[in-house]
Amino acid sequence: MLNYLLTQEIYEDEENKVREQSDLLGGVQRNLIKSITAISAPHNGTTLTEVVTKTIPFIQYFVGVAGVVGTQFYNFDLDQWGFNRKEDETRASYINRMRTHDAWQTKNMSSWDLSLDGAQELNGFLQAEPDVFYFSFVTSTTQRQPGSQIHIPIEGTPILIRTRSKLLGSRVGYWSDGSQTDSLWYENDGVVNTISMYGPSTGSNGPDPIVEYDENELLIPGQWYWIKVYPMDHWNIIGHLGSKERMEAARMVLKAHGNRLKTLPPN
Image 1 (cartoon, rainbow, N blue to C red):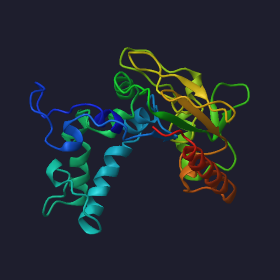
Image 2: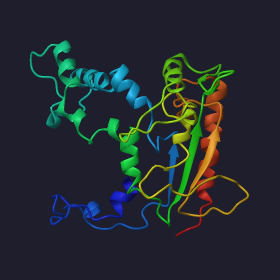
Image 3: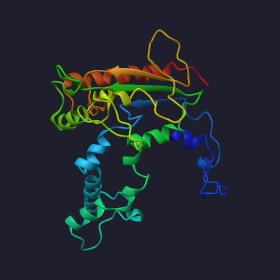
Image 4: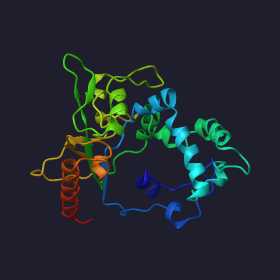
């Protein structure tokens, strides 16, 4: 999205007559981004959004709690959106108000971007640029249950991840046209379906070029190179909640990638 915003002229009005006043967004900015690396990213959405908004109202509840915390420990600067807690408003009333906030009905929320339909819409215009190198780290902490297509968490998966991993490993998701995900979507890292991490493939213009990374092949800009890290969950890969073995594996993977980026050819 950042690369798209930089390489497009952004307008303030719906008629596209008044350009954004900032120099950064008001004009086309080329050659500012050399490469993009996605880590456990839901390129095509995650079926967890349906679980947490229909079964467990996690997103709405979290924002409510964040607002409460914000008034006591940290200022999230959300007052202009009506997320602030009103004077003399009880905690319970505040959280209930947040759950029915108008923001949840718009597309200006991460819950839309992370949904199957939201990601599909974004993939329709956020296409790979021919002068940018793309990399995707693919993670998984599940395995197929014997005699079934369902995926279950493997040994070593943190307890905070296991419940969500089981849900993702056994439930289908739906697009607005009625089509649904298949069993290939069951493998996951506790937050994102693994199949969604390889690269954008659900846009109206078809999938971006997506290939497995091979250190012996010449890197070509404009296509996604995926690297699978297994076993690894959504938090371990960035250094959270993992065992010493997983934490060290994540450190080595990211260090190697840093060195890989250093070898990219100049513009």
